[in-house]
Amino acid sequence: MAETQQGPPGVDTSKPSVARIYDYLLGGVNNFPVDQAAAELMKSRAPELVDGAFANRGFHQRAAKWIAEQGVRQFIDLGSGLPTVGNTHVVVRKVHPDAHVVYVDNDPMVQVYGSQLLAGDDAAAVVLADLRYPDSVLGSEAVRRLIDFREPAALMLTAVRQAGVPRAAITFEPVIRYARWSAPWTWSPRTRVPGPRSPGWGCGAATTLSWLTPRDRAGCTAPWLGRPADWS
Image (cartoon, rainbow, N blue to C red; front, side, top):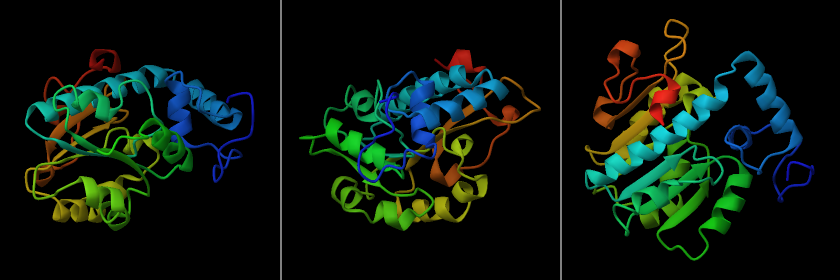
């Protein structure tokens, strides 16, 4: 795919996509020259970007597994990106084979390839929607069919803020609206980069929505705090 500018219907191959850039950083093939150019520019300014992408993926998988081990069988993966090794449904079903998973992304290519991957899987689905608009996500047919918010659920928010979604877009009204839809013990793992005062460090946390607060380096607790290489 990297050698052609043609893509699935509805996919704009003239502009870089966060999902495809992330795919390129992880060594995937579902990306285009425009995505590769954007990723290489980003890498020139932040050489640790590739390590960070792999480290974040490792955290996502460990967080999903840990939450499943707490008895959670329902997952909404917000800003899921393109299918890759160790997708959420694969990880959590090693703990609960009956787990339900809904992937959400605003890139049409994610829906195309994700739907192909999940063909015949009645307990998992892909929703084409913007996570900044909770009603479009939570009111979608797939979420209403697969997620029962009277029971514990996980709203996965890993690598969302550093992927271009403004901080205010996912820490105030949208998150409050997600919380109103969900049970009080719903889990929300997310990752972030604390900032220039903690170079080379990242922060991940898995907490209930009722305790969802921004954290600096001092606010992270082991094993979630560490240099990117320590997360995988």
